[in-house]
Image 1 (spheres, one colour):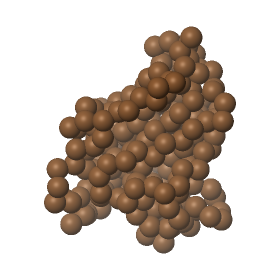
Image 2 (tube, helix red, strand yellow):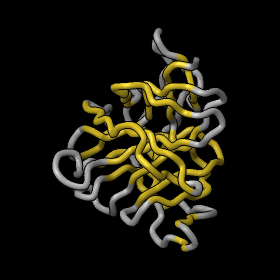
Image 3 (cartoon, one colour):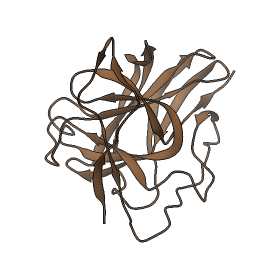
Image 4 (cartoon, helix red, strand yellow):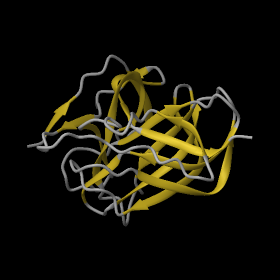
Length: 213
């Protein structure tokens, strides 16, 4: 049986103000070991970033909720973002995220954003609409977004993988979840009033692939 719970964060900031609305997490006991999936690196690409574990533990059975503004699942809009850096200059061609569907349109958007004072800033590539998502609290497929052209990123610079929905129309009623890997890091969130970051204990599970000159 799954349960929804509020997660208390050490820090939740936007500019100089503290947000009252905090993102939600969801946990479940699905009756099977949640083993994740092995990383299958595309033959024409190289791994730029990944926090996914090995085949036996790629990610875990808890997640940040992701909800569009017109969700019928209850609660507020909630978008989630994962920060990453590349050790080398690279071109991002593919984004993967452990985002799953629960209700509404069976699709979510994945994008690449710049960093702005520690939270997502400017849209750099995407959004790519990923359809036919895996159902929430089943195992074990990653949402995969292929960019139409590779986007050049700089070594050592922070970027963000963003999971969100349109503000209206098809997909704006999406409700789902982005599964964790256990880690203390900064996480980005937008609960309807703009992006901010907080210090979380769980990192959204994802990976970035492309070419490294």
